[in-house]
Amino acid sequence: MKKLIEVSEAIDFIKDGDTLLVGGFGMSGTPLTLIDAIAASDKKDLTVVSNNLGEVGRGLGKLLDAGCLKKAKGSYFTTNREAVRAWSEGELEIELIPQGTLAEAVRCGGAGIAGFYTKTAAGTQLAEGKEEKEFDGETYILERAIRGDVSIIKGLKADTFGNIVYDHTARNFNVAMATASDLVIAEVDEIVEVGEIPPKDVVTPHLFIDYVVLNKYVKKGGVYVEQ
Amino acid sequence: MNNELRVKVAKRVAEELNDGDIINLGVGIPTLIPDYLGDKKVYLHSENGLLGMGPTPPEDEINMDLISASKKPITMDIGASLFDSSDSFVMIRGGHIDMAVLGALQIDETGEIANWAIPGKTILGVGGAMDLVAGAKKIIIASSHQAKDGSPKFVKKLTFPSSGARKVDMLVTEHAVFKFKDGGCELVEILSDISVEELRDITDANFTVNQESMNL
Image 1: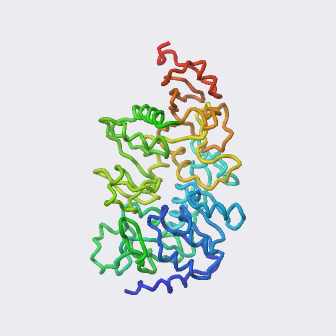
Image 2: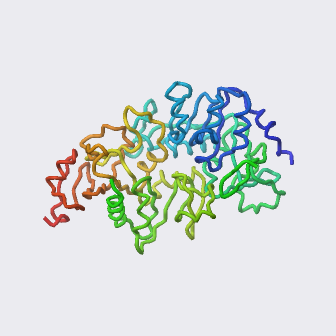
């Protein structure tokens, strides 16, 4: 399989200062193996776009602890108190985006759409500095699309073409993020022969995926643990 | 607010839900509502990508890739469907959710709410709160009548950061039910042994009294 590469090769595509789109909602649907490898590298000044920043010492929390991050863009960071501390001490920039606006901004980024008007956050602190426009008597704000240099996403399974299926609610931001970077790397638990995933079950078609790596974690008791 | 009072609020909100409704429940009191629906069947939407959320699974069936928006393990009801975050917020923002039941830090007398940030404290989480406020067809606030320090939560004008210009439809507290309409607020029901005068004493917001529904 041409797309299957080692984790070490995969993270070589990430450069200092890059914007990374990282799938996941909390710890679910998070590419833990790729994150571990980035945390162990000397990459720095990364901007991470993700709904959360993992938890303290877990998931994306590891990139923060390892000093890889300059900025985080997402909807909810309170669950990682290290992120709150780093922000309050000026070590980390944070841009707060409503969850639905984040999802749509990334979707637009992958869809060739520069921006969109939304009612969400109109008239609030999160709309400060953003263009307002009235449509049909209601106020909307302009939100710009989000794109990344590299997306790292997490699927349950890939076939040898790179078609991806997901576990239950682990789809979350992975589906949009798979479309919205110059380079997209998918981490999966299992790789099967092309044809084994019924076409009607494919959620992310292979054209979005550049490379695939294997997850080194295994699921035990419903949670990913190190082997 | 003790659990008995939280349950009382949840039960009263449950009466407002209609059979067949698509519902999104916020954190706190709203999560108690599914236990008090009786024969009514509603479909619970979880913004991380599930319609048809079921109860907590037994320990040996937990899968942390089947979770609620509060990141707790859940199950799927019959007829459930899974989708990604973009589609989930198409449902929320696009007016496809019949009702959102949310908590609030403050509610003003016009029905505008603040439910994401406290001034002077670090503001690092908004989640889907503003999307639900902007897009749900109907919004009910389930809340304690006063803040923990006894100060009014139901106020003339918000002092906490607003969650959006959209006004909510109803407020249910342990003491009373209020409806919002045309920029004003009306008391429609009292749920405790409090008098209207006593209610005004612990409420900063102005409200009228619906004589008919109050049987006055």
